[in-house]
Amino acid sequence: MTDSHSVTLTNKTTEKSFDMPVLSGTIGPDVVDIRTLQAQSGMFTYDPGFISTASCSSSITYIDGDEGVLLYRGYPIEQLAEQCTFLEVCYLLLNGELPDKKQLDSFTRNITMHTMVHDQLTNFFKGFRRDAHPMAVMVGIVGALSAFYHDSLDVKSKHDRDLSALRLLAKVPTIVAMCHKYSSGLPFMYPKNKLTYVENFMWMMHGTPCEDYQQNSVLVRALERILILHADHEQNASTSTVRLAGSSGANPFACITAGIACLWGAAHGGANEAVLKMLEQIGDVSQIDTYIKRAKDKNDNFRLMGFGHRVYKNYDPRAKLMRETCHEVLTELGLHDDKLFKLALELERIALEDEYFVAKKLYPNVDFYSGIVLRALGIPTNMFTAIFAMGRTVGWIAHWDEMISDPEQKIGRPRQLYKGAVKRNVTPISTR
Ligand code: CMC
Image 1 (tube, protein in one colour):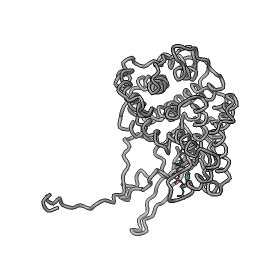
Image 2 (cartoon, rainbow, N blue to C red; image 1 turned 120 degrees about the horizontal axis):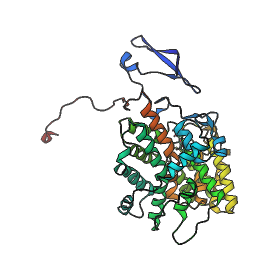
Image 3 (tube, rainbow, N blue to C red; image 1 turned 90 degrees about the vertical axis):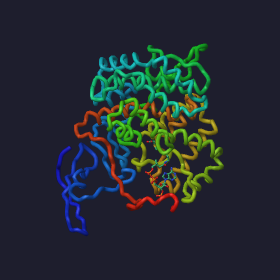
Image 4 (tube, rainbow, N blue to C red; image 1 turned 60 degrees about the vertical axis):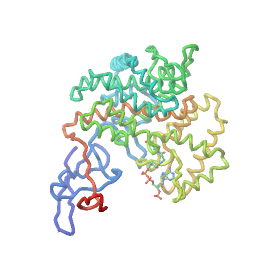
């Protein structure tokens, strides 16, 4: 960051002015550095939802929402999605550079060596109802990891942070698959180290002890793409949650669990599940107009799930790639005639032409299509957000690690505009 110029804020009431430095990144908008504002003026800034606030500096991911650009460590998402595996992208996000063959082999071997979970962890599942939402189980089980891996919890040690990162990347897919098996009443499947990361996940999800499981390369590649497209997205709600949790020195397993909890919400990672539920609710192409009208009605809280994005106001580059994958998967499985898929494509067409959606720049986001692909991959709807969490784990870890290593890092502690009662005295209960 360079301190190129400054801006002056003037309080018109007191006629006092304050100079604030302007900082420039390598690309993207400049930021006004307001760190001394409170000391100079006694005032805070007010920005609910962080619409105009850069909460940190970061070198991991860059988004230009107007141009539909998404870069991981400088590389366009389109090139990564087309040319790399998920583990190459993980290495890139964690280390800043793409791996060479030797580095990738060693990284893959290290991940593979950590895919099993402590056997006692399986007991935790039995404490959950079989019909519990998988994200509720994920929050419990991933949170419990810090009770098992005491030897990698010193957040100041790079060795411990790297070991925790490997453990999380390796074990989260195993836990996601276990959540599915538990809710289906099926036996847990142990990881198979001869398989790739994604093949292994497909095996743990869909395999059973009594049948051979046939991998389908189109489906494996589709899931690989889902994971790549969800791997990171700069300071989104769950990543900011992980950073905030980590800013107090909490251990990585606890911080990633905080991210999983935040991701669950329907406005964030829960959207892919909400898309499928919405399509089921709409039910038939003939009902689309009714639901489009409801989405536009200010007095109705119905929203078209899978449409709109806080940052992307022209198109979501991930959605473009996911749409492509969606068609590949539907073709491979001969599902183009499926009622729900036809409904989704028609909804997409109508919303893209509708004046309200066009004027508000509400385009289909990645989760509109990822839900459709996941359904085609045979993944139950209530598992969709857990798959998102599996992809995003690497992004959360990269941001957590970057934050811990940042010499400017401080515990996150926002302030507020207080609008409550002014100071008053407690009266005895008999007189209230
Ligand atoms: N359907 C109907 N109207 C919408 C929608 C929608 N999906 N999204 C936004 N609007 C309207 C909203 O009512 C508001 O109208 P007005 O200006 O008249 O009050 C306007 O568009 C701006 O909406 P906002 O909620 O202020 O925008 P935001 O940037 O705070 O919210 C969003 C972004 C993603 C939360 C929102 O678009 C939404 O709820 N979308 C549906 C949920 C969804 O698909 N989320 C997944 C996001 S992609 C995955 C991820 O990265 O987590």
